[in-house]
Length: 253
Image (cartoon, rainbow, N blue to C red; front, side, top):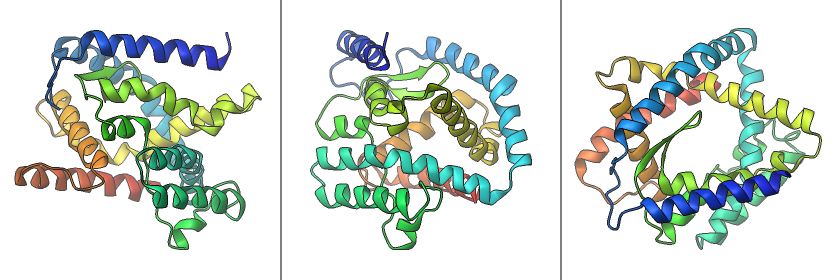
């Protein structure tokens, strides 16, 4: 079975699940599958602490900051075509053009994306994905779901995962031995960047709820381009997540 065939099969299955399970008028924090989600959270947590986290800690210990920053830039550059396409689909041609320009500059002058020369030149990164595009198109969000070995999502976001994978240039690279190693490196680097943010989970009485609320709040913020239609309490809560995001950035530096 080819990559494209597997992708289509996964996408079709997720769409069917969404059509069958998404209630009308569901709230953004609707979590009807909480018992299952909690079990999947435990599975993900055990897998992370038993394998991925130790590898990420060793990776961070061995590699200097500038090397990890280069790998982070490389990973973000590979996501730039996804960003560009979704800006255009959302009716934001200027942002789409800026993201395409970022990809050209960083892929050439930035040595394959290892150096973010575009940001230094004033083109700031504006990430978008198909889940955000579905939201702009008015597709219902659906229940909160914990995806095995991936993490928290809304059903709408989960359904969009195959499209996000398809838009990744690395997915289309034919040399599988190189492609797979680069993908593993991206995952380890991402996990290493999140190590400093774990204190938010460690200090929580219920890490499952903390993760769910943090994800949902950040997702609202992303979908509404930093201006979500929520009450004032949201902004007080979001300040904590901004601190979380800054810690992740500092770790990658």
